View (tube, one colour):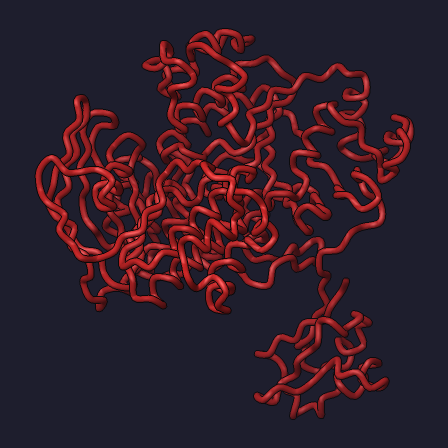
Length: 589
């Protein structure tokens, strides 16, 4: 569907006599396709506009453009049944490159990879019969995929995959980490991989005892150790801290110099650093998906955030994701709401020190630091799940807590689960701010224990924010959420904090999410697994400089305002480190 869009800043309806209305064929038949708003400027009904283009030619101020909305194309790559999901286009593996796939969950990424791996033959839309390889070759003749698909047809390609959900690994393998990885070391590279991912210390641990972060690193190592023609990694970042994410990214970059690598990743900072090109996936999740041709990683990510694909002339999102060029001082005049007391927590092998501070009413406080340094322990202390060794938490404030690891431990439906946590479920405000914002309408009648990881995460966030509380603590809310969902969650959390004048603390490793959501930041420092210290809260610039200096990584903004990781050793990287500005250094800031 093609629609016309009026750029109101260029529209001068009163000066031109509203020529767009006079000449619109739908207006002549009585339909109010184009109307004049209260500000005297034109508005076009997207439901009625047929995209004929007459109004563009008649507008003397170049105020109207025609763009396409996502709709199914003519020639599908693969279709599941008469009314089943349809995929259009395929990503292209490139020797010596990391190819990224960026898009919402349910847009066809897994189907595309199965086709590229030879596990599924594309049916070109003919779901009721087997399509011959000759017909497939004819469709892709003259394209970059022609030679690759010929190799696939001969069943001579081997693929190594890192799955999105790693929870099932203990169900299919029992034994130690070392025993598992030994079976995957087909390239004799395990000795190089283990120290980078810091896995030597847990080689004797049983798979069933590993944390989410440890299991993620084992899965990455197992994939990279195999000898394959194509490597596919589906989300490497969940449960990994920023240090571990960058370490994994460097290993993948090294491998890509010899073998093609394809990666699906929703942490845009890591995808930006890791990929050479990206394919954007758009459409309607679970209905149809379209994979674009490859784009430069900077261009592809920026177009995805803008919600408009320039080359395809397609607008697939109503709102643009904007990174504000601000000093993060919005909360300087907010009132203190919650006092973080000075306290300590001692375990047999770990010691946490909290220096104290405040959380303000209406603010979102970001929390960053390495895994195993005490962030989740700190959240549990505030939530009353753990008791401090020294210091006291005395407060009459109500606290709602979403833990890092969430479990589907009930067969109740999602609706019943949420009704148990709020009396406002049926109100229009709750439906709009919680149910619609988290896209929960379609799973309200699904049992909680049948949900996928991303669905379960959204339900857990909804459950936390549904409770009446003064302070909300969300531990890693971005895990298993795609970019679209992260953007919605970010907006919803900020709105929840400001609208209800409550405090919200967000612990996460997604730098983009932390940057968009936080007004101040708490930085955890120390030695993971041994001792940690909670420093701050700091203003964003001071806190992020402190955090990124320890990480030895610098960030800059591009022209869109989006934060980007500087390549290690580049001119900008060296310049910012020399000036001590690790975070968003520009001449005018």
